[in-house]
Amino acid sequence: MLGVSGGIAAYKAALVARLLKSAGAEVTVVLTEAATRFVGADTFSALTGEPAYTSLWERPGEVLHVRLAREADVAVVVPATANVLAKLTHGHADDLLTATLLEATCPLVVAPAMHSGMWEHPATRSNVAILLDRGVRFVGPATGPLAHGDEGIGRLAEPDDVVAAIPPETPSNTRRPESGSLLGLGLLGSLVVDLPFGDLFEGDRKRLV
Image 1: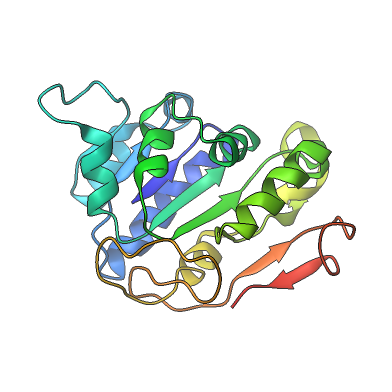
Image 2 (image 1 turned 135 degrees about the horizontal axis):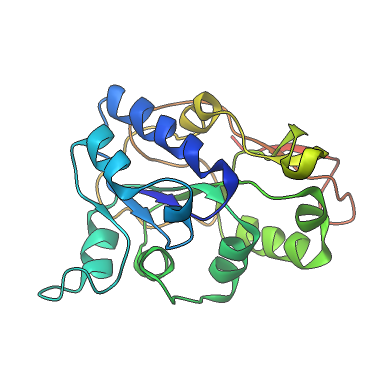
């Protein structure tokens, strides 16, 4: 499952979807309402050949978030905004994406994207530490040009790097690990997290594979 949240980098999730599909993955996309302000659900349906979902209420005949959670072998969130990271940390489930992720037991990979101040804020630092401790894997963020003409850490990792960070294949409904290697969609790569806050982590970069 590919989750897309509402940041300017959401358009890059379309390339992630295409790369995953080209690699042989079956890709189901779930967008937040905010994400649809940047890229439409029809774009992802065309790229994946599967329906893209945006609302808890669009399939009244079924409990959609439960079905999507049970079908997922791995969940990847691109981009993962500060808001989504906070919701994941505290168990909020007020839209289809966060409800599905709260229900899911599969491995979770997130690719953060936000302004430097948001990434370096103590609240985000705390949320990242908690999610890492739960076994969530991070790819990026990278350093480079940001919105508003700024430059710094918080840029979404490149789509190729996101795809390379998804580890090898696992049966459906494998429980999210507390630690160790991740299993996913049949794609193997290294996973690097940029973490510029040394009081929480050992150094500014940590390799998680």
